[in-house]
Structure formats: C-alpha cells, structure tokens
Length: 316
Image (cartoon, rainbow, N blue to C red; front, side, top):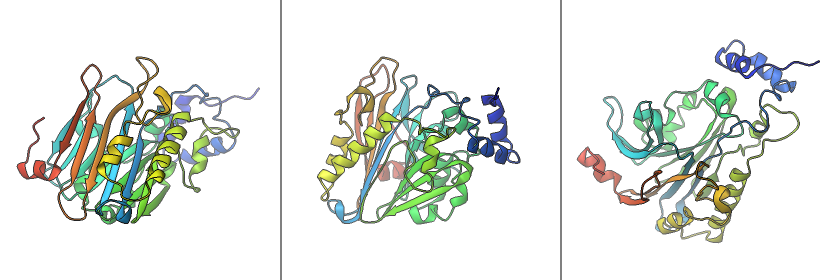
C-alpha cells in the first residue's frame, strides 16, 4: 500500500532549504496529491486591473484592486512614515499582527502603487510556509520611487503571489511562483489584468500544484478574470477613473464569482474593499477607496495622497 507524506512533513520540507528539493521530487512523483485534497481551503481572492499610456483618457495610468476575503475582520486606511524610507499610504487589514504586515494596497510619496493577489492554486497553509520576503509590499513602497527601480530588486520577489506595480508611465505584472521563480510583464501602452491563477507559460503548471492529474479548480478567479477583460475590451481607449469605479461594482456573475462579490452565505468570502488610483501624466494622483467593513455602512472616499503626504497625517 502506498503511503503519502503528511501536511506537517511537507511544511517541514518547505522550511528547510536543504530539503526543498526532496519536496519537489515528491510533487513530481504525485506523492503529495493525497495531502492536499480537493476540499482544502484555498481562499480565492482579489481582482486586479490596470491601464496605461494612450488608452487612458488624458494619459497616465489607472490601477485597481478589489479585495476579497472572509468577513472576519476590519480594514482601515493608514499613513506610514518610516524613519528610513519613503512615506506610503495604504489599505490595511486589521488583526493581531503589526499594521505593516496587513498592508493590502498602497501608494508612496513618489506615486508608485503596489497591489497584490493570492496565488490560490497553492493551498494557503503551504504558501505561508514557503520561503518568502517579509513585508514585500512595504519594502517596495518604502524603498523604490518607480516601477523600473523596483524591478532592479528582483531578489525581493520571493513567496507565491501576484503583484501589480504602477507609476504614471507603466505597469508591471509580476507572478511569483515557488522557489522565487518569477515572470514579469511590462505594459506602457495598453491594459493588464489578473486574479488568482498563474497565467505565464513558465509558471502555469503551478495551477496544478500537488497533483499530476488535474488543475485545481478556481471558478471565481476564472470568472472574474474573464469578466474584467471583457469590460476593458468593450472600451479599448479613453479609459478613465469613472470606468474603473463602475467596473469595481460589477455583479454580473453572481454572489461568489463577480468582480464585486457579496457572498452566497453570511460567512462566505466577499469583496471588502476597492482601491483605485489614477496617476495622471502631469498632476497629483487621485485615490478612490470603497470600504465594506463587516457590520458597517459602506464608505466611498476620494482622496489626494499627495496632500496627505504633505500634511504628514491622515484623519479619517
């Protein structure tokens, strides 16, 4: 009778860099399939999209994130002014950890925006145990002035997830797989979108992590990706902030698979926030935020990050 390694054994292998090769040999042999059953929790969250260059009305860059998660916590906007680094303003998920660990989207004083999405094809418990860069978004926002500068630090990009970076001239979509393998796509005139599955040909096999026989099903991710691409394609030029704000509320695919998710049960994952930034070619960035904190009325805010940085404080 064939035996399979336990989840605890796999996590131990992931923590020990000398043994990680053994783990990936087990993956190749199909030995971890039983350790990650189809029903394993793989929170399937976040929709990212952007436009830059001549497709944007007036030029510049638009970038957006709808943040989806379980309705078990609160969020707030916070200004960070590190002693050694650039100031940044961000959407924070509140919990027991330090605020900077809960950063989910941000913009710094130079107009660099960073948003992220989970690599949900890899079970959450396994992703957390894999080698990763602590506070990656914080490191980028506090240490880089633009997209090009961030991409000179590819050694930072460790730990499976998807990032979208933007400044007023370009957008970078970064897929980070296991072992720090990355794929970068740059857009200077056009659009970009991402949800929770690997799209790059070099990394797409990670969508079947732990299985030789089938790709892990991510119906919400697939549906949201198709929908946001369709919405963007319908208006291929002259894109503006109003378009992005409107699309962030799209509910055409039901409570669990839409861009704005309401959840099919009271405990189901749903959209908790929208973070949308316009970075004009000339002028101050504009930030739109929608907060849907559980138990509270939905809030919509239009903010000037530049004014917040100048004042050195943020008062809700």
